[in-house]
Every structure is written in structure tokens, then in C-alpha cells.
Image 1 (spheres, rainbow over the protein chains, first blue to last red):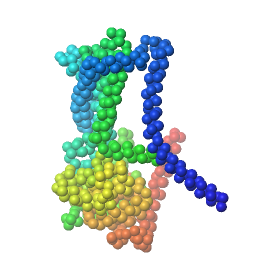
Image 2: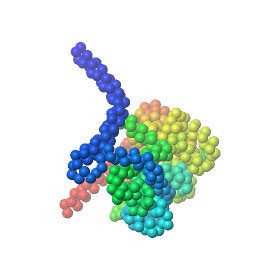
Image 3: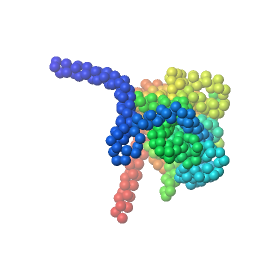
Image 4: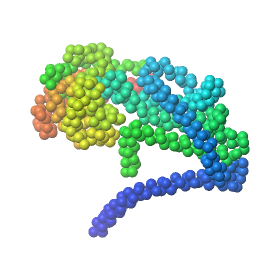
Length: 288
Length: 279
């Protein structure tokens, strides 16, 4: 008898636990937002404290309050909007060109052995040269300053996109090609219906990486050759001893970079609906 | 479908096929000859690793024989063709297409039928394999059994002369497997095409087959061909009939001989290794 009640109470406890588990997971969203906010706040608090107590050489670094004050000023001026939009346009220009060239080239290299042998060695030699190393030549070569900075972004974004596209094609399961062949696909049909969709997930990874590097490149390019732009503004702030403005520039670059990766992720989900199905089924198995 | 009744005969004539690695050459098929009759369901059974997948690849045209001939209706196989359809060991449904689009892939690639015709066929087939409510799902959202059924539908919509099944139900649990076999039989009995089905499960082999080809160990050839004269349409009850048990015992005996040989061969190999270590 006693034994029986024990099992019953155990069962009840277990079902309670299941119930609690479900509500726990609905709570986790809130806990997550709290934790994320704490993460960002603590960055500002630690920074503020380090500057406030002047630990090591932090006396030289502007504190959060100063930065905020200068930032509001700067955002009110016309300069800010010109800087931000020019930098964004340069990144977008370089990035778009990189996609337009790297994706088709990568697809061809991954798919076609002859094309691969023909182009890949050259690209492998060019690959280790960082985009920044192209700055002097880019200034020399392009008559238009916008083009030279955009070109540096292009070089930065090009290789991650190219390499990920190639890997994407090469990782496609051989059985998919075989299946397509025996279903009656001709090479052109295979290219559009197997190679392209099969490589898309990897291409989108490459695009996200490329976008990040394009932002790095634009700042470096503008510091050296620009008259406008966030990179130029940061460097100018340093030379004119307007130190808080440096940090403002950095924050704006960070936010713009964040925006662009969110946009890329969104486009990726639109282009790759089956990926969403994968992540959904993953989420399910994690929640279980 | 009358013409496919007398088409789709596969003949292996003295086929030898070896796989070359950098140093060694391993012979997989050795003077292997057999006939897969048209319009029948032939099951190939043999110990694992005896080159069953190689045979499928040879018929499909993914590989070519080193010696001998693989003939289909008297014509040597040179490359893959949509008259010969393979259903793979692992599911090869395209993950980027929905269930419905996967089934439509063949007709849209070959354009042998209009889109409207293909659409009607696809829906009919998907409903027949019990996937009517799952047409817009991606393969990853389907269970293993559903994926296999979708793959069957994707193959059958092309009305292939020859269906090549490479252990298609491997890795499914026993219940699903049984269901799949029944689905498959129903489709085969309606379609009348030639089917070559490869498996290493005796029950499955006898349950499905018109003809059973038993393979030897590597280097393998066809050891024995058995007629499976169980009645059609076949139902699960057949598995309890006396004739089925006789056939099973018979097959087991032949396979057992091969298994003994295989273990002796590997025993010899072990001794060889030991000897070489001592040296």
C-alpha cells in the first residue's frame, strides 16, 4: 500500500516537473534578455570605472559620459550623416561587386575541374595579400577616390566568399549528383538545381564573413585615403585631439556592422527556407 | 506499359571489376554472370561487402566493368540514363526541395510530360505512398520511413524501365521496414517494370523476390539462382507458409557455406598478418 502511494506521488512529481520545464522554457526568453542587457551594461560600467579611477593609462581614454556628450553633438551635425552613409555605400559597393564576381567564380571552380586548375593557383597566390596592402596601388590606379576605397572592401570580401562558395560546392554529397543524373538531369540543369542550391548555405556563411572584413577594410582605407567617412573621422579626431569622437566613431561602426550582419542573416533565411526547417528541428531536439 | 514488359532485361556477361588503390588492386566482381529478367523483381543477396553496390553502380552506369559486359536489352551500358533509376542506401532526396518538388524533379528535368501531367502524377503517387499531407514539407521534416516513400515516389513518377534498389530499407526500424516492403510490393505489382533489389536480409529477400540471386564472397560471382514461387499479390501471411520456410532454409544453407568460407578466409588473413609480424 505504502509502496503504491509512493509510486503515485512520484508520478505526480514527474508530471509537475514536466509542467515546470515547459514554463521554465517560456521564462528563458526573459532571462535571456536580462542577461544580454547585463552583458552590454557591464561593458560600459567596467569602462567607466577603469577611466574614473585612472587605472594604468586609462586616464588618457575618454569616459562614457564624455563620449555620450560628444556623440549627441556629432549626430546632430550634417557631417555625421555624410560620414556614415559614405562608409556604408563604400562597403555595400565593394561587397556587392565581390558577391557578383566571387560567387559565379567559386561555383565554376567547385564544379568544373578544368576551370579549377586554370584559376585556382593564381587565386591562391593572391589570397594571402590583405586588402589593406592594396591601398597605395588602389589610390594610384583609381582616378576616383570612392572607387579606391570600395576596391579595398571588394578585395577584403572577395576571398572569404570565394572560398566558402568553392567548399560549398565540393561538400555536396556525391549521391545528389548521381540521383540527378539518373533522374535525367543534363549538366546545365544540374548546375542550377543541384550545384547552386547545394552551395547556398556555405555561400551565405561566406557572405557574412566577407561583410565583416569589408567593414574592417573600409576603416583602414578611409584612414589613409579618405576625405569623408567613419574611418577618416576617427583618424581626424585623433590628430585634432578630440578623443571622445574616436570612441563614437568606433561605436557607430560596430552598430552598422551589426545591422549588416542581421540583414544578411535575414536574406539568408529568405533564400534558404530549408535551413529554417533544419534549425526548427534542431530547436525541437534541444528543447526536448 | 505493355512494352516495358519485354524491355529492361539486364545481362551480366563475365563481368570483372576491381577497385584500385595506390598500391593494391582489390577484385570485387570476378567472372560474374547472371540475368535479370524483364518485368520481374530480382533480389540480389550476399554477405555484406560482396560488391552488391558495385553491381548497382554498373547497371546504373556510374561505373564501367574492367572486363566483360553489362548489357541492357543487348546494348552495353555507357552512362547513367533516366530509364534506370537508383534508390540509394542513404536517402538522396534533395534537402533544398520540398517533398513535392523532389518528386517533380525528374519530369521537369527530362520534360517527357507536361507540367500539368507531372503535377497530377506527383499528387497521385504521393497520396499512394501516404504522403498526401506532407507535400510541402522539406525532407529534414520527414521521418526515415516517409523519406524512403518520398524517394520511391520520386523514382516511380519517371516510369523507369529498370528500378535499382540499393538496400533501400536499411537503417529503418523493423516495423517501418515491414510497412515499406508492403508499400513497395504494391507499387511493383502495379508497375510491371524490371526491378533489381539488393539486400543482405534473407526475410526481405524472399518476401519480395520473383528470383533470388545468391552471391558468393569477394571476389564475388552469382552462386545460385532460386525461383521464388510464392503467390502474388504477396501479403505478410506468406511469411508463415511452409513453402516460405523451405525457401528460407535453402537460402540460409547456401549463405552459410559462404559465411564459413569468409570466416576461414579472414582467419587465413589473420595468420598471414601474424606471420609477417614475426618476420
